[in-house]
View 1: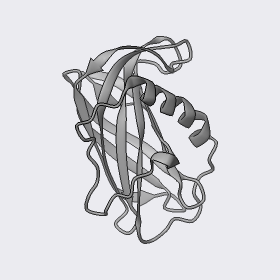
View 2: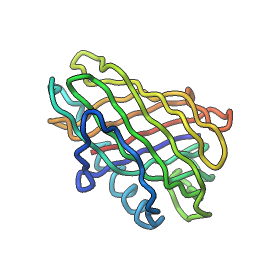
View 3: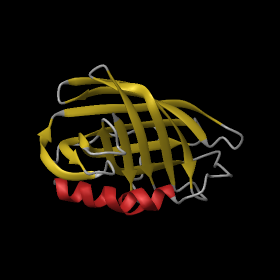
View 4: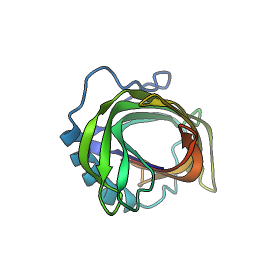
Length: 188
């Protein structure tokens, strides 16, 4: 399975260093999540890696997360809402995801049609940035989606000049219901 996570600058949230994120209780309509995901994927992937990381302050990101067996082909998956906070002084990421819909994926692995709303939430946490410019991170995932345990991690990097967002890719270290996952996290 794969996870794709997208966040727009228009949906940028200012999270406090101690706050992290929660997904709240409001249900976001599937069409809104799908539209946001479609807008984020080409936008965030086009951003360059951040070369100068701030040493203080924090940033918040809100967007979408997509989980599927193989996001390069047709199948089924889960599309949901995600909130991520980055603290540049402590070099930590804290976030969560929820509001998941079971979806059909088109031939390129992108959300196509909704099957239905499912229960679930994921905690996303990391400690320490790495890389030559301090622009990389490793986050752990814990939680459940549709009654299945999700666990494992994702490796990522900050993108954009200030940094405007994050991109994380993982091919199989996270699992959903014991099945290996691939992950693509997008945020700006």
